[in-house]
Structures are given as structure tokens and as C-alpha cells.
Length: 341
Image (cartoon, rainbow, N blue to C red; front, side, top):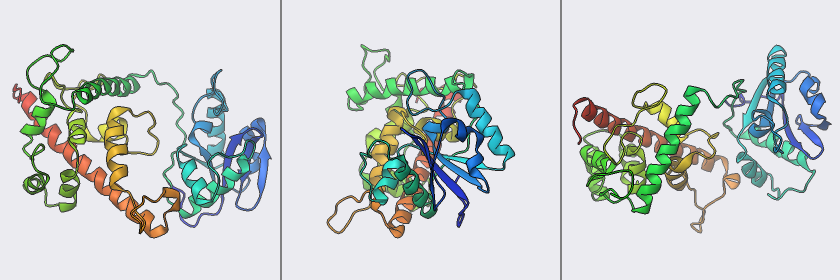
């Protein structure tokens, strides 16, 4: 979700030492914790923009940035609905970007939360920031939620093991994966797009799979680590097929992108798969350099550079999606045929 273009009826808010600091584009106001729950300060406003940690994560005994209990949060959400106010929440890491853009010191002085509210207000007005609406379900123990975390935990185990062996083709017989060959590397070989060959040969081979040269160009530049990570979504080193515990099925592309690789701005602690694909893949691919070949910080990009960055990001994710599709088809086909590559 994004703030509509040319929208002026929105308020940004930040929680800190002095309670809530809010900014409507002209005036700063301090709002207490209880006053905020009434939403009375939002008269005539269509959108309230707040950091995710402050208005989606439930408060615990040890928390600092979490403000409200689950029942209080639901009360705020429902009141906002009755008042026709849309709550939009942005991920925490966006703060460093809008602070840079506004010339703020990243080590903000304690109690100066209104500066964040002002900088954020400027940022979302001029940049299409990815945000989300409230989620009333705070239960992470549902079967669907457990499936996400269990799958991620196993992926972390597999990739930690593979990383310790520099992604070689033989399994470690002393660990839980037995056998003389690695099923994940075997899946990459079976997919027949020259995963371990010369990058130019890989690019040419991908021409048999897709006419999109931009997709082929991204995959051409992927490291073995990134390709191994994508393949690990479908098979284990011992050749067994991976399935979701909530459905019993091989995971779909959309589920993997959203819950394992984490292609939205709201995935924190996404595990090794997200780190390999997103932080070491997408971010490096989307880098914008200045005349001195130095990387430009996101908060310092101009409008044209931002658009270039977004286009490159979409291009990379499209290539990851394409690669997931190829590997899933091979893995499922082999499984249904009772073959082990």
C-alpha cells in the first residue's frame, strides 16, 4: 500500500520519550498515549502514517518501542475504520533513508521525535514508500505461521551447512544429510541452464527458456550461492522434496517470494535465504554510483536515480521468480516420476 499521489490530508507520528509527536504538514503536536487511542487529533485526516513497530507489534514487559497491548491495538484499528481513517505503517529501516534525505543526524538526539515526524511527512509525499495496513491477528502460533518459520529454520540449517562447505557438490557424511551427491546442486544441473558453467554460456542457454534478455542477464550475473539458495527452496541435500507443514505440498512461487525470500519491505530477520538473495543480490544489483564510482546512499538519490533503482529491483525479482519457476517444475516433475535426478 502507498500514499495516494497529491494527497495532503495525512498525519505522520513517531513515538518517543515525550509520547507521540505528530505532524500534519504545518504543525507539530505532542499527543499522550491515551489521547492517541482516541484519534481525536485526526479530525479531517484520511491517513495516519506510523512506524510498524509502534502500532503493529504487541507490547511486552521488556519492550520499549511497542506502545500498546493487543486489545488496545485492535481498538485503535476499529476506531480508525469507523472514522474512515486508513492507518499506514512503514518498516523501521526506512527511517535511516528519510533522515538522510532531510539532512538529519542518524543518531537523533533523545526527545527530538518531532524531527522524525516532519522528515517522514516530507519523504512519503515525494517518494512511493511501501507501507501496510493493520493486521488484527497477532498470533504467530497458527499452523500457517508455524509453516513459515519451520520452513525458514530448515532453510537456515541447509544453507549454513552448504556455506561451511563453500557450496561444493558432495554432502558431509558426518552431518544429517547422507549420500555421495548434493541434491540441491543436482537440481541445478538437471534444470539445464548451465548453472555451473561460464556466465556467457549460461546467458546463451537461458535463451532456450525465455526471450527476456534482461531476466537472462540477471541470472547470468548470479553467484553460485544465490542459485543454490533458490534451488534449496525445493529439495534437500539428501534429494528429498521439501513441503509445507500446513499443506503438505511443495511451496508455491508466491508463498516463497513473500515468506522465505521476503520481497516486501517488512521482512526482518528473514534468514539466510533472504540475506543471500536480497542483501547480497538485489541490493548490489540496484546500486547507483556517482561520477567517482562511489555508491550513493538511498536518501541521497534524486528522482531519476530512484526510478532507475526501482526498475532494477523489479528486474532482479522477476529473474528470481523465473528461476524459482524453472527449478520448481523440475523438482516436482522428478518427484512425481519417482526419480532422484
